Length: 298
Image (cartoon, rainbow, N blue to C red; front, top):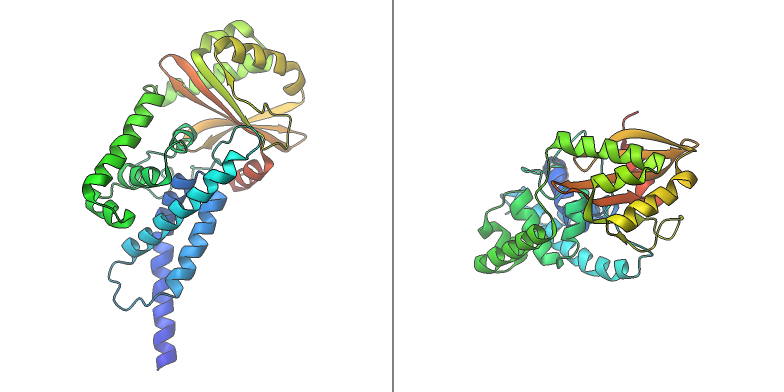
């Protein structure tokens, strides 16, 4: 009888975990900016859930969310040290959002690559507070319980995160305009058309190339319209002739997958405001690029 009870309990625990899994992944991914690290967090959450006395746990999702968020915060604190030694600019790992546009969230906030990049500048607790409140619509009281702080402090954490994003990111354009400008940019980049590039780039545009030291990517961000446009124009003859492009979706936005000899070499994504393209993000590190490509439907 005891064996049967244990089996039933584990089956129920498995069902509860699988039901919560999309949301748990969404939280960990947004806090860490890495799908691989998020999967590690979920594995640890599952192990702890298995080994927990679940008799008096009446809200499994709340319990699992708390474990996941706290593990992600701890992981983010150590990840910050690792990223300080990362070779070249660090960009979040892209995810294919065609199957789950919100990655388990109630709201689509904080999934775009540019937002994740800006969240990386916050401390892990601020990041978690923002993600739980803005992407998952958790009440401040519950966020405070998860973070083991007061509700008043939680409101301050979320407010600071909002102000940081508002200061760093201009108002966005419509999805149609975003796609149009990316199309114009791609054609101009391929042709090395300096005039068109200067026309679509914002004055303070920044180009990030995340190669992790493994490819010929720029190891520093290229900043400002004149520098970025000239860099792209000079880059064009060496990069584009052998390349093929495919339109994909990454983190809720259109993106361009670049391949050479059928091997992925870059994922191009941009952030666009009314002033033009203000962030260009080239994910070139194979450790981030290959797993993303593997998730794409053929």
